[in-house]
Amino acid sequence: MPALSDGNPAVRVHARRHPLRNLWRLHPYLRPYAAEFSWLLVAALAATAAGLAVPLVVQRVVDGPVARHDEAGLLRLGALALALGLAEAVLIFIRRWTQSSSSVGMEAAIRADIYAHLQRLPAGCHDRWQSGQLLSRITGDLSVIRRFLSFGLLFLVLNLVTYAAVVVLLIRLHPWLGLLVAASAVPLFLISRRFARHYHAASRRMQDQQGDVATLVEETALGLRTARAYGRGPELATRFSTGARALHDTGIGKARLLARTSALFDLVGNLTLGVVLVAGATAVARGGLTIGELVAFVSLQLMLIWPVQSLGWIIANGQEAATAADRIQEVLDTPPAIVDAPHARALDRAEVCGRLRFERVGFRYPGGAPVLREIELTVEPGETLALVGATGCGKSTLLSLVPRLHEVTTGRITLDGHDLRDLRLGSLRRLVGVAFEEPTLFSMSVWENLTLGRPEAGEDEVRAALALAQAEFAYDLPWGLATRVGEQGLSLSGGQRQRLALARAVLGRPALLVLDDPLSALDVHTEALVEAALRRVLRDTTALLVVHRPSTVALADRVALLDRGRIVAVGTHSALLAEVPAYRAVLSAEPDRRHDGAGLVRS
Ligand SMILES: Nc1ncnc2c1ncn2[C@@H]1O[C@H](COP(=O)(O)OP(=O)(O)O)[C@@H](O)[C@H]1O
Ligand SMILES: [Mg+2]
Image 1: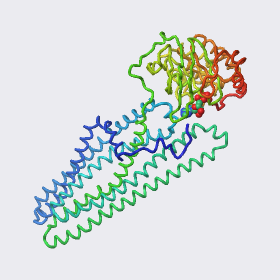
Image 2: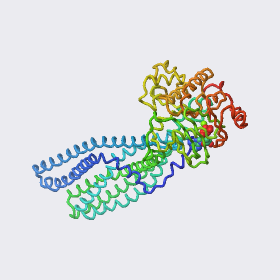
Image 3: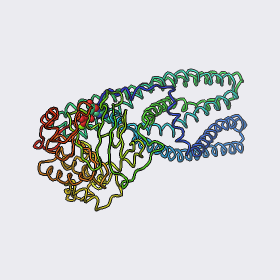
Image 4: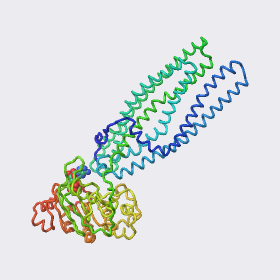
């Protein structure tokens, strides 16, 4: 996991073609809810219309029945105003009711897509992205977008329509005063634009910082034991409080920006209102405007207060949604590098002999120097080949090419003559049983962890795999195989985790076994047992093992010596010992870790 940093430039700095472009690109998710959103808008607009009609009725009341002391007319118009008010209330209720369900459904749809996409991404991306960043994107950012689509966007449309409608009505009541109110839109627009620009930068910073804090919390939870053991608690706490403080400062900055801007909006609104009141009173005195018209004029203008006041909030919300959409699209835009070729076919376990060939294979990590060069290697059906080499020479990388976790850069790997890239990924990965250096267990039951790649596996197969890996301790766990192992299997010892991972790899008798140092964390006694058991599986499975200790090299039929990404010697253990000094050097330099116990940090 990459360390917490100011952020990964490769991930964060993105060309922004248009601030709202990425938000707009989410529109396909709205389509299923188009009908719902239209009803929403209709209800909202109708509510606004009912609201706008009330001041006009009041105008009639003041200039008609009130001026003429006409009680029947007063009742009639009063009833109309009441009905309009009721209609507005009902329509607003309908709007609120529909509002929530559609946006929540849309949020769920985007989230499901991101998650599915994350699973298709090449392993390299997950190395590059901090998990906390992903976490905050998949939770926080999506909620921001949902809030914008369900409230911000609606009110933006609604407020613009209200503004336009009020201005038209005002101009009809009194052209000059109406135009004055219309002109107040100019400063409002300028203030909004400036605000949007500043707010955008702040909200992106804040969202990235939220991701950093999430990463730190997650790392602390996972690395708690290591941190405690090294007495690094206080240092982690300092790092956390620095991150939290930065987040806090950005939050305050944002809030102050919003406060300042809202004050400006209020100022413009109130100044306009003041001018209208003075000018309107003068007009009434000169007989250019009736009292009823002035009342209507001022009431209508008061209806603009909320739209103007909420403008700052809506822009802020829109900016946050736009940056959230940027962050989400950054994930969705990362192409899944390793996918099925159009012509890819599936291979049945029964038709596979298991002849694995590396043909002039070269590999480099994106942006890195070549890690593997010109690898020529054949593992015959049923043969066990051990890979030996110094730390960092590319052993784990070589293994990861077999289940296609990374794609070869040059050359090709074949299984029974089929280029691996011509096989369906799903099919290939069912043929290959894998155990990595860090035996990852997910926070689910032992059974689910074991049958991860073969959910259809039966009781007998699981029992056989557990027996083979000397992992029968699993039956003695509090709830047997139903025991949920904690996050990353922390509640098990390193050796136990490794044996479960081994059982997972051999479950269902895969055609190819790829094991990265499968015995590293075992104690002497278990190691001997697992070794004996492994020898039985390896007899009829093609296997590629990374091995560190001389004692386990004995498992292999042949050994390949890897040096800085090249195969420098291949042969039997005894032949290499006798003839290749470099081989002797690597094996003797490799300390025999039998007595070190579990949990060593390895290459
Ligand atoms: N995900 C990665 N991205 C970039 N470089 C990597 C990655 N994983 C390993 N490397 C580099 O590739 C080289 C070989 O690593 P690895 O295959 O893990 O060696 P080994 O397993 O033999 O110790 C090392 O120099 C390592 O730094
Ligand atoms: Mg390794």
